Image (spheres, rainbow, N blue to C red):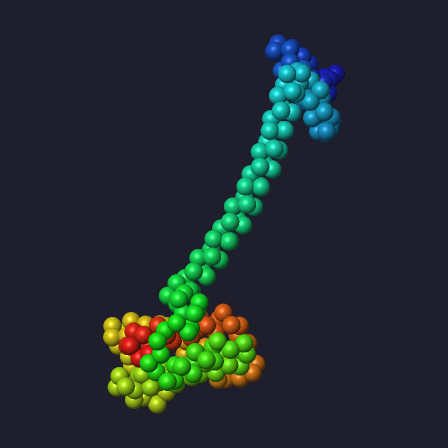
Length: 214
């Protein structure tokens, strides 16, 4: 009677001459596989490792763990710096053109009576005055466009008729006018802080100074 297949496999394995360590490992894994004991195979493999191999694996694991922690810290630090730099760049982009204006509105020499009213209101501590200053600026913008020959009914229509090559600050005018519209439509519900109000007035000033209107 022939022996079971499992015993034949083990006998065949015993007849092969290998390196003692490799031979022991393969026999342990193969014999455990026939019993579906993978945990036992892994445990036996670990126990059969030489001391120097175990020591090396522990050192590699420790080094990998420490390296992962260091890389994680570097990643967090770098991400925070990138966010801070992008925020700073955005703020500088908004304020570069009108930096002088936002710092001091009393410095320029006033040559337009309506602009004097804008300066008075924007330097107030009342948010309602800041909104009024923006509305007054839009009136000055309308006057300027009409003097330039644009007689359309609304400021938006006037700006659409402008030739960009003749109006380099057209984007400033559009941005400021859109905020004015929000104030006009939302009224007291529209919230604006002093910094933003001065930024908007600065946009208008860029336009007015391009045409020496103030």
